[in-house]
Image 1 (cartoon, one colour):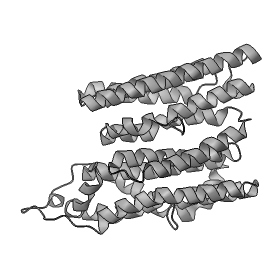
Image 2 (cartoon, rainbow, N blue to C red):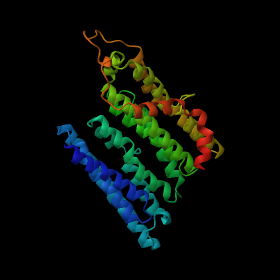
Image 3 (cartoon, rainbow, N blue to C red):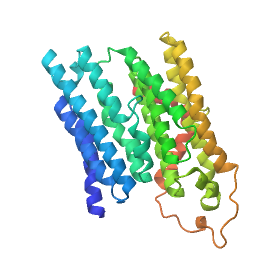
Image 4 (tube, one colour):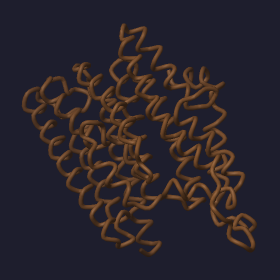
Length: 347
């Protein structure tokens, strides 16, 4: 794919998300989401590999079904209430259908089956876009609509945390692990959405930061399999030292940045009388922490059978822009003390 063509599709991704974020009418928001979907499919197939084409086909059918359901929910709400405004989706049936359609859009369990298969067949750059940017518009719509059916939201959240933890246990492909990690983190965002929406935003921002840092690191290491991380010390030793900290931050361990949203969400659930739900969420998160520790072990405590002779790759000048990954990695590790200031700014 030529740089000009690629830039057109990337600009279309930005245009689609911007259209959705600035819309109050369901048709305009739906059009923005569709522009996003149609713009990322050529990026998925730019390698012309059969598995990439298969992944793009699965993604298209999943998104087409979710878009049809979302448009039907908006039309049903307009027939029942006479309004196409996003914030006036007050009918329970239309609201429930809309939540399910948006859940399928971003891959919340039990509507998640397309996410690992699609992610596994993509390159790291496109997988980064799918894991981060493509979630903004649907989550914005879910943030805007009235969430009267809180039981459905809690079920989707706790089920996503469970599926994200269980699904990643036996995986060896890093992109599949990141897919199940995305499902688990979406569960944390959704479970608190009807109780404290600003904590959902905090969890989203934290996930975008940590996920971007991990993908930047993997792109610099050119790693898509867990075993390939065992030779990362010979390639980029400084990045290998920070990768375990990013993984622990993704798992939500203190004193790293990823601990803040999980701690605050747990406290808010307990204040709302959902202590048992908070306990289940914490216990199920230990499953996700296990496969992060597997990557931690492979990266730091295993050595390859032999090292290639000659000059090591890390001695050459880096071929990537290192400023943005450096800033993202630093924020991933060190932002926990600034949590009160961030919450003050958000509220």
